[in-house]
Picture (cartoon, helix red, strand yellow):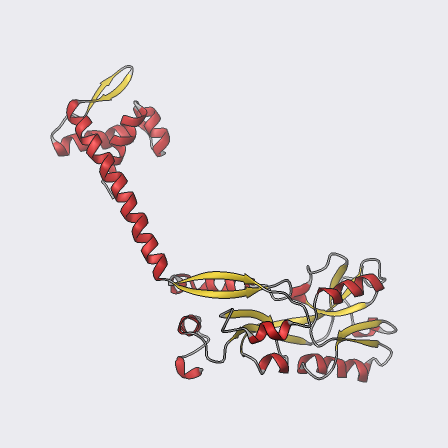
Length: 300
């Protein structure tokens, strides 16, 4: 808010030496001297008395220093107030996050938008993945959250919210530590012969149902054990404890330390993306337009 010359004068006066001021300003001593000399020449005033013991302000320099210090403080206060006002004007986006539905993909999207996202600030709200209550969480999208990032082709979820796909995660198999398959780098479907594979029960997810159909048709020796339509951490705990394989996703590879997630040589995946209200808030619509995920209000 004040000139570089005045900033340099203040620093030299505070340090009492060109050398110490140069270290603080990350400049060379000759560069600091040059700035002070230029300021003196511009103002037509001698501001510093130089001696072997250092420098001190002249009477005129003292007056200029005092007023420059005041201007510097007032300028910093004005800048901070202006920044606070700009922050207050930003639209707040409330993003839900959980162990199985982390908000990182949303944050990655927000950061990729760069300057286009400068009008938004993010408020992250945790929620529980409990399979018995997850539908009530999804139903609160638009009320408690503007967005949740989730793996989703669930018919039950899609009745409650709008889904905007961002990509897909490959289906994988998680093997408990110590299981004969846990040391493999990659699996083939035939490696599952004779194993018990835990997966979500039929009827809610077309992507999972297609994979189940392929297993029942091509590998009937695989024993499929139904979990609920939605996973929570208890499913991971049970498979690790009972030594059973778990149908999982590449994004969940770090969910449980007792399970090793292995890619499989098959072409099965499930979409992930943003869950939002069927009638998003104006702030959410604005973000979606900037992200190229909605053309306008008419999309909703």
